[in-house]
Image (tube, rainbow, N blue to C red):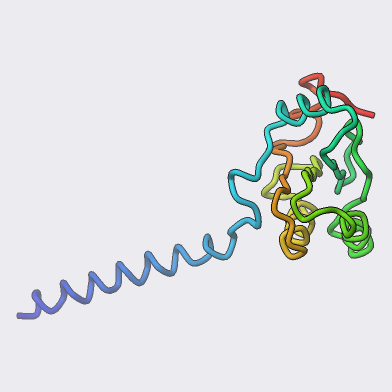
Length: 148
């Protein structure tokens, strides 16, 4: 009889452990969807083809400036976040916006989350994060894409 009573208890314990182990990952959800990551090759094509450029490109980090981007500064700093807010205030909510940092891998970047969250909070619907999983040098410059 003891063995029968043990099975439900073990089952509940396993379920509890699975829930507890999953909780940290739930809190680490990114403010962007996978579909909001723009491949560098796509932005390169936009820069090459659009004249005048109808896509707003914002540099939100300490790395170099991609051609035709607007320098904001590190958005981990409140003053830079306010500067980004000021720059986008007059834009249509469906404006094509691309932000990038490129200082380090996304998992370590202190700038992409505050900036992307701000755009979400302001109600923008067509904003993207340039997909620089390693950094600006490896994922943009080394591919020969244009810089200022």
